[in-house]
Length: 476
Ligand code: ADP
Ligand code: MG
Ligand code: ZN
View (cartoon, protein in one colour):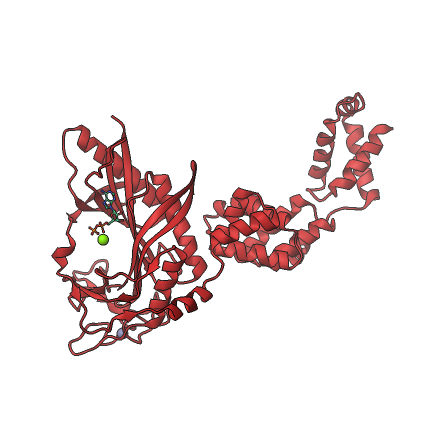
């Protein structure tokens, strides 16, 4: 029997507001233990929370960017559970009236565009963090993260493979980065994803029993976890067993999942409306104001790049998907670079360089102006495009401007016909066989000759001039 994998995700995103969700403490990562907390976020008795309007704005932004309806009258709820890093004994969250509902995100899959439903986006707060110091027989609690604003994005069970899951996460992250509400760093936990997975016989309409896998800290581990867990469930079913609904923990080192706890239902948490906070009433004006603040979204950008700038579909998608990449692209054009040239450098060579260095597009340090300057150096014939690649590498690694790199690396192109003429003569003299081939009509031999000249000049010869000189020399 063939099985189909069904995936739904719950994604927690830490919002990059200045202050926390319910108090004035700074919202920052990496500060000294317990330096960013107060009686409110530590949940001491007698304190009262006040909601951070900026966090509500950000949640609405996320909702609008993912085509959600905004709930006009929403409430916060208490989700009761005990945990050492949650001194209040409950998490302030939303169950009954999430702020955003019924949206979608379109993703590009191998078989075309696929729509992934967003069931809801709700607001909540993060908990503190347990620290287990090496070699000490105690654990410590750091409350800096307690009360950091979060949104939880819950999808419909619309994904069908690890690949779709990965692409969805990437697309969603790009949207969130584009609207600027979070830095979305999976390694630092500002974007955390729980994956619900079930399998069912292909063709079946009914959903199978699912498990929920936590602790995924990269796109790659999300993909691997989906593959592992779906295969494990098929094995259980094929072996005559039944999948147990439970929460699993993914171990990145072994690539396997293991049971964390049995799955709890919402009634286990004894949710009830938070009595200490006012209802959140969102009117038309508020939504309109947020809509105005939304930047151009990746999808709109893609269409503009394709239609107005003539960038091919795949390239346009890639450029528009990343906030940093599209910013560099647009600044380069503003600084005079031709769209196609700028796109080519960013997509082809740069992507490979980033991959080699395990860098994310967000980490590109050079500017669009620098890219435009690089393209101009090539257009003017100061450097060859081969040398251009070296310069781009230097820009990425050192952040130095292209003119400086050309100087430092000694890449100025040799466009001096006398200097090159000498080399050309020598190469033709040293290679009688290819020369004879060329004269007999094998024009392909030209590539051999220019290749030799490039080797001797360390890629610095002007290729157009080289061709001319070789053609002249070989006619003799
Ligand atoms: P809970 O209330 O336990 O959190 P939800 O119904 O809210 O469960 O669903 C949580 C997530 O699990 C959603 O992303 C949803 O799409 C996904 N999900 C629900 N049922 C299944 C299933 N059978 N297989 C895969 N994913 C599922
Ligand atoms: Mg849930
Ligand atoms: Zn505080």
